[in-house]
Length: 377
Image (cartoon, rainbow, N blue to C red; front, top):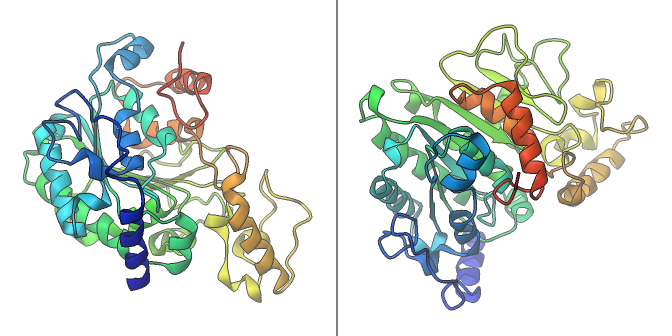
């Protein structure tokens, strides 16, 4: 952890955080503007991209045909605070300044190792809720996700926990009928840290409304616990958990809608591709076959992949190193179309239908594959 912290501090100094920042937003309501509590120059490139991208009220209204609001996006960079707690408190203060707790939906998101926020995850859900939504994130590192994953650094877990503690702590003091529905989200390392931060004991007296985690890395303790609760006969890559009232799974072939029971008070969804080695890498494959190799091969798995001690471990490690370059919808390349249906299941947009999901998928596909904000009808 000390080595990683030193690398982050060095990178913070070396990268062009301060001198090459583009002009801050002119809208005083936005994060990093002249009226913001967050210093624009110190936010860093991933955060600045997140704040200035995404659909605005006009784009959302053009798609839905209904009045819309400009979504709220709050991002605090690693250089905006010296400690995870300081960054979390700054994020909370900025949420209050922008009126985020007066929105219908509030999402506490955890970025990937570099601080990147996937537009494919965040653009669609803003369309679904007519922009009446706020999303907040705090950066914990500048390092590439694979490095952080291998080193299993605590920095991401500490930042996600501090942010959730701060936001949930304030949220639960508000009247239940006068506060947003609260969700947590993360992709890859962001999913890992978000799951770690989602302390069920803290949520006992006033639980959040749900969680949506994509591409959860194999060491994630909560993900491993849930996976082991699968119903007998359900595949390891797309398991069924109980009656589906609490936890459901999605992939490139499933949308988290199928279950034997309706949703309960809290909704949790995992999006994981069956060919994603970041999810399904198994350290014990050095001497035994991973659980998913005991099932029939999934749709995008090779029929010729067989277990060989030591060799399989090497193959999976190589796959993991190359997984970020897979075609969209496979490996570790998650994209907008596969986020849309699970987001609809978890956040239950008012009046949303399957036809709306299909139309939003087509709308996103007209833009760029990563997100939806540049899509044009």
